[in-house]
Image (cartoon, rainbow, N blue to C red):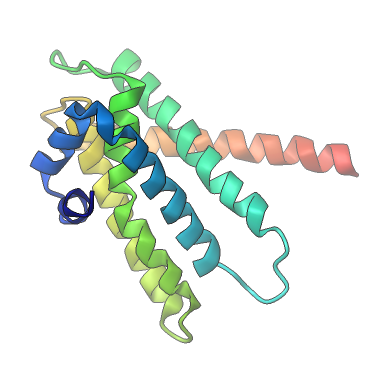
Length: 171
């Protein structure tokens, strides 16, 4: 698992192909997603924060929602001729693609923490693009970027709508 995490962090396409094909890596990918979500939650902690479990759950639900939109857009709306993928392959590849997110725990460091969080987020974004490109069998990195951006924007929109309704319900 750690060898694959290192390969994923190095944006090694062969590593993503390996985990895409290995159905036994699904659990490992989910563990990485959970630990990465924990790192994000902890790294973004501020004194007085009380909703840490909600943030953790939100990070995990965000990943699952993003996965669905990646699959829908990438497989159903804008596939390449070679595109054949299922949600399991996306869980495995994007789960391993979250490996750089582990460094977001460094957000706790004074002065430079915010910069390290931004760098880890950009690194995770790059890893996610490679993960999606490999899972969807795209030749084009641009198409993978497009699908990731559309999936992310749709996920954010859905979350904003849900938050709006939850806030309206509580007031």
